[in-house]
Length: 230
Image (cartoon, rainbow, N blue to C red; front, side, top):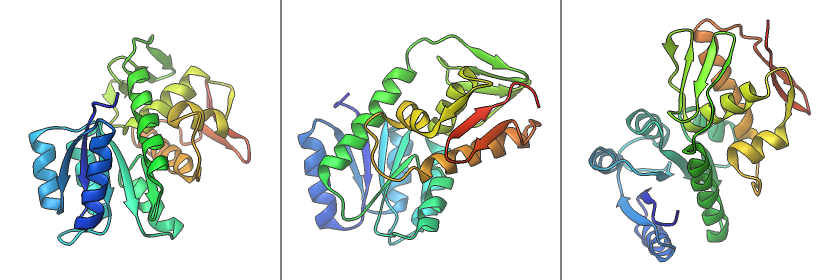
């Protein structure tokens, strides 16, 4: 797990050097990009398992780069590092394709806990699990592919994991805590706003491909339920 290849996108030389040394010390393979253009070039050369993305870059808006990297590396986990504390800015980053975020300043212990959690989820997702189908929606967990009818969905890693868990418990209420523990990590700490953003994006993608917008029901203060019939 600790041998994963990681791309660090950070333009501040002091912060970048400190993070790179810390990551190398924990056994990660690290490529460091100081600009958006360099980041896209490095991803084209080798797709990383993880990307740490600072939003404040000199040559391009970080959110726009996040969206581009998500297209370029659809299965890579993207963790945004940002000094922006306004909730709507975090939501925009998550909606652009980020899987997680950390607000600066952050503790290295928290960063490494998050990275280990994401890598554990990737390892579990790689295991062979039976395919699931509810109505016109089906998922193949082993191939990490999902369809509505014959149309394949383009899902981010966490969107796929959410859909898989909701389908696996179709007709049942799945609590927010259970979704966070399963899709992110049982030791997750921090805001659960990321869950709402990912569910919203998943609902939108299903609707775009002909699914009923009420297929995923929100139960306020409880969680979500994937309806078998709507």
